[in-house]
Length: 543
Image (cartoon, rainbow, N blue to C red; front, side, top):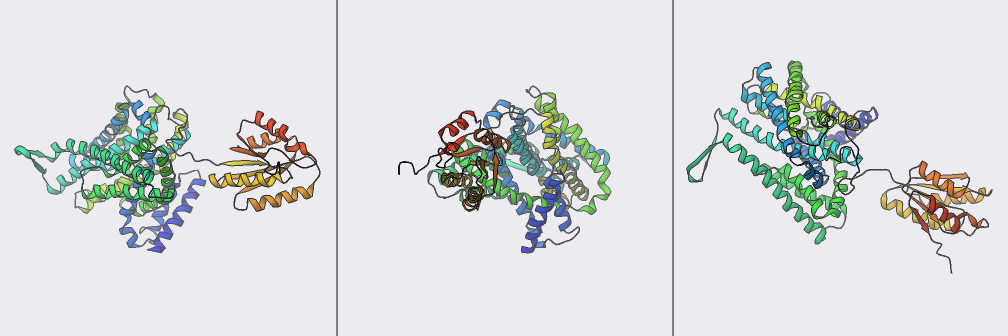
């Protein structure tokens, strides 16, 4: 089993990076790695790992849904009114119905079996859509109108609806008759009549349990301080979120995935600093979870069952997306402030299939439903076609179809390369400047540019400064630059060229060329630099 995990992590990571360097989404490489490592080709993944692949995928989906909740913006959702709610029901419903009708026509399925296929294919993939939408939010695409937030919320609600209908249809087809439930006062309802109540119950209880879990996390992690660092915060939060998913499987009265997403959402409202720490922790967890999720997804795809259903499967997928889902998108955004280009973005931004299809695609076949093998084949085909396309299309078309707005760093993690510039001379004050820079760089995991402006011919002094830089910044990625020129102008020019976040410099010097970093120079940089400047006082003054 240990060897299989090593294969999954290493091969999945490197093939994913190869795909990224070829300008394709990393998940394409990870799915391909799963196909190569899985039983279809190399067969190097242990059966024990494959046996627990559903559990591992569940953990990965929990991580990405928690990330989604921690990235939601309440103000943007309120601004959208009913758009997010409609997107949770109309596109999925219309696609499922379109696929059902197409399956009746092309595959000669009855309506119930066709709708079963529609529920499987219509479900959206959080593993593709959530990272894509969070990245758009971090870059500002569509954030003014809350488009990523509406897609995230609608995706979670649509999966709740389709999974409930899927369970109902599965019982109906397996038993050959509708089940009924007896309620108090002699009332008897069929499973179909009970479905709206189940949907409301799943959503309401999921949101309430998310609120309770968020309050519990705030109590444990922020008020009573049971943890000492961000890693422990993330461990506790992930464990409680996974507990919600496990409880939902045992007691299917609420949506575990919706409860996880709601937990993250309410954490932002209850304790924004805690939410920020958890956002960073779940970002780190997702690095590993993403590899496991998509490699095991690829390993679960049965290539041999695709041959007979390739062409009809593509036709059914096309009809479901381009007709059914398109109608749902139009109805969802009717009366909203979305323009035509933003509505068109829903095609690449809200169509990817992966995790749900991998989780439930084989269930009809396992339960002996007629047409189960065809259902499994089309589910696998939907993953192979839409997951790579969706992961590629979201970042590709967002700049072309969406407007760029201001990023809210309190709602989403902004990943960027941080660079600090240390302007130093050959005086003893350079040690204090470099020490301060090193402290700042370690806190923010930043890189450092050490800049020395040459004003006199002093090769020995420059060499000594380089040695001092190497010693004080030994554990920090840094670059030493020595150039001639005017000190204030060159400091600002280099800072802008390297897009540094801060400039650190001394306030006075003690060499014969005292004017190098005396008050007049530091004052000139302060007055003309658009970049924040940190001045380091000479602690030897007055001694």
